[in-house]
Amino acid sequence: MDKALACLTRLRVGHSKGRPAPNKPCLLLAILCEIQAGHITSPRVAIDDRLVARYHDLYELAAGVRREARPWLPLWFLASDRGPDGEAGSLWQPALSPALAEVADQLGAPGSLDQLLKRFDTASLHPELYARLASEEATREAGAHLVARYFSWSPDAQARLHDYLEDAFASGAYEKAPERLKGPEGDSPRQARARSAAFRSLVLEAYDYRCAASRLRYITPDYRYLVEAAHLVPFAESQDDRPVNGIALTPNLHWAMDNLLIAPGPDQRWHVSPSVDALVPDSRWLCELDRQPLVLPRDPRWQPDRDALAWRLDQLRR
Image 1: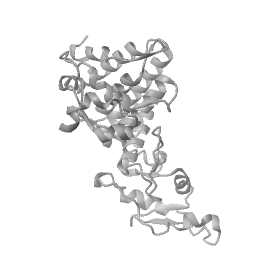
Image 2 (image 1 turned 180 degrees about the vertical axis):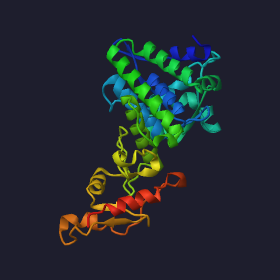
Image 3 (image 1 turned 90 degrees about the vertical axis):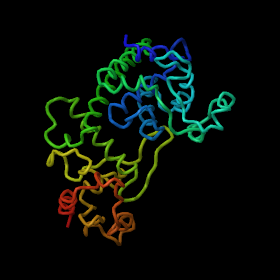
Image 4 (image 1 turned 120 degrees about the vertical axis):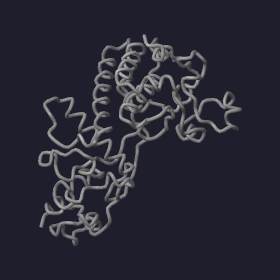
């Protein structure tokens, strides 16, 4: 086994009912996925919504229940594990302030993610391990080792995790090269799933999980998002899964746009169909959107394509 990867099979994990606890392996699997998606680009790892949501996804697949995922525990206790150099605490080093670092051993485990983020919001993976994980082949090997070592008690969990990793790595390849999301899907079901997942991930992150119409942003305690990624020009017509052909919307407004009741226009404002009767009380929530500005991504690369906006406005029910 590769020396840099071997440390992943020697984690200090708790046990429950004779099984290794899934917390640390799931966190490391989440980190592997984020490296391959190009979201983690150095040994320094940001503790952000993407990573925590990915951890919840993997924990649910491994343990069968999402609400019991407690990401602050592996984020904190992984600091006790040995890296490729064999030194205790070298695998994962939280970026604590000097004052906190002096008393870290006395703090005890945080009781929530908010408490943990008050202590640190970034940590560093051992640089030798990160350097190996820059290779997709090594990342796949690392994922296989983690799944085999810590989930041998459940062939079903192993199969679910392997499927997730395959889809995540395929999706990550699109996220790193979003220009590849324009054009036919190809014949592979996995390729279609990967494109769809990449579209969703890129759009929701571009809008910071905020609805482009209502401005609502809500992430549940178990890291499910209120908003959905909606195509401006449907894929069946455009064969375009690039994020510039997408917009983040709450489910009700996604439905309203798909049913041609509302549309974003190239003027970057919302337009409401004249078929929506403003005198009907139940219609007011839609009518109030008329001429309101779109919430736009901060990164200009991901702002909606003007031609796609024009197409969508042309479809508005008259």
